[in-house]
Image (cartoon, rainbow over all chains, first blue to last red; front, side):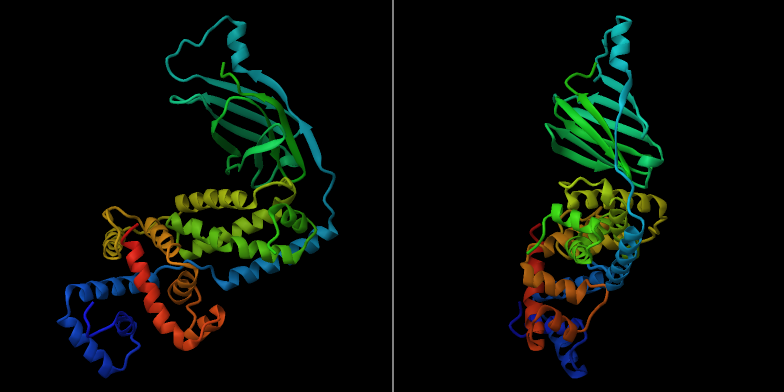
Length: 210
Length: 182
């Protein structure tokens, strides 16, 4: 950096904080300054421009709106006490692995195999696809829920538990689909939770794919 | 003392407004930043963040007591950001070139195909490496939606007004060095 001008002075100049006379003096120095100073000027000018187009902190009004939202929600909730929570056990109604076994078919495909399971319950139907992964022994688990009013909502929470402990959790997308990747092969409990009910699939045996 | 997620979830279910304020403080920046990383505008980012917090109230009964609040909120933010990004028609004329050029000047190697979201993420990363005091100061001076005056920044960060100028310069120099190395 040129000895004639400090970095702080350059910042003040670029941000327009100097008097016209001071600004002219700095401009003259910068014109004949060394490479390091020129580089600093370019950096500061670019940062100034980029930062004017960039915001990393949310607006204060967002917080104010959310505080008001919560107050209304809490008051409404107090008036309308939530109903009894339902825990619904889902039943397996289709297993592609069992179907193949019944007809004596074996999966001879050289590609990774996939198994489809369909569960039914009062809270909705769930389709699961269990897919082998090509390069390790884990599995990918993809699913879709067809909810009823008890489990409806914009978002459903889906949890994968092993021995009562949460292994992984996610939320559904707008099609009520969800995915877990690289799931170790073992037995799980899958819980899908909506507004007033949860659907439980247990045991969900992921030790085999066919 | 910061409450853990279990305590916060239970408190929210009871309608505890203090717990709600604590959750907003803990997560509002993260949920605002995630859509920015997707390249969304700040207005869309604010909408996404707001959506996530509202979904939390709608789904509070479906969370287990041991749920990871940060993980749940982040997943919702990512999903919603993706939806908004797909719905929006972004104007690309000249934008990509400017972003790449600016990012190169700021010190990023291989900046040729950097998107706006990637630049924001890179800046955010750089700010996380310059120390909390510098990060808070530069965020307040240059990257705050409200664009506060020096006096407001000094009050908010408990600094003397006269110290802001020199500290600002030191922090910018530090950021310049860090961005050139990440």
